[in-house]
Image 1: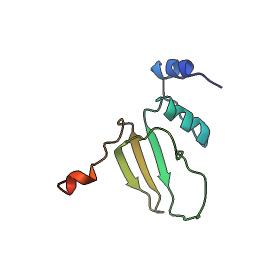
Image 2: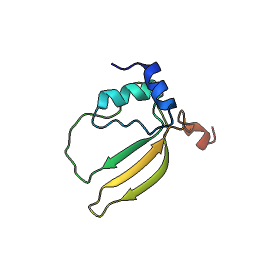
Image 3: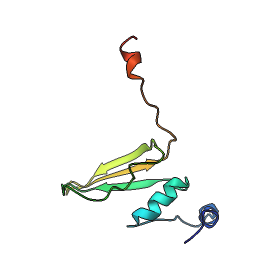
Image 4: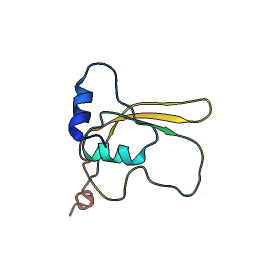
Length: 98
């Protein structure tokens, strides 16, 4: 498998971009190593009722920033996100005045 250092070196080169298609385990590894600059998610209007999560139930929470979104005529939505750090969670008791 390619190393963190090798991916960092490839990203530093000015010629083009790196893309990952169809490898959930590689995408998870890249996210864990904070090597993802942008992710494009395509959402199809199909409900299957089961499947494997793209992001695991455990691990670091992240709060990606939506930078672009559009829909196709067929109802597919395309969202482009960039990492924006850790999420900021609201304190529910602050809203209750306690």
